[in-house]
Length: 187
Image (tube, rainbow, N blue to C red; front, side, top):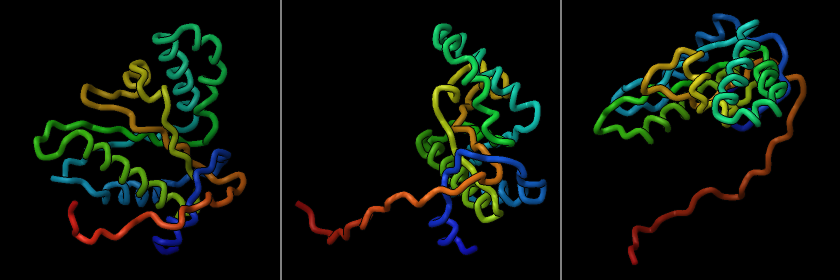
């Protein structure tokens, strides 16, 4: 699969089942992640893989973390929060490692993380797997960050749910044009 085909055929798939990538495939996935644009070679990202019983432990972190910030919501959504990680047989946690670098502002480090995640998504697809990058309230919960071992200066950029697609998904409508030509004229 060439890169254009991978980009044009990749979909965010919510229904994911076994199998998941083996060690060799994961090595290729994370090699691709490390090839993302990265001003001054800061490597402002790292990743955790979660599978098996650790998925249930992550669900408990989601619930406990929400309980600390919004107890009423946590009680109403406790089953949902606990079950969220069980929607896939593997989760890759994308972590931003903010670095104090005058020439690379924080927003640029977030862009690098996003590019790294895109490389992960495309490589998973090229390897025959499916994924969905999920964000939301759980990424900002202190209990979740602490439970996953994040340290000061680290934030969760999302949870990449990984597995084999249990179904298909149609391509979204694409805009006719995403660019205009600039002539160099100023007003």
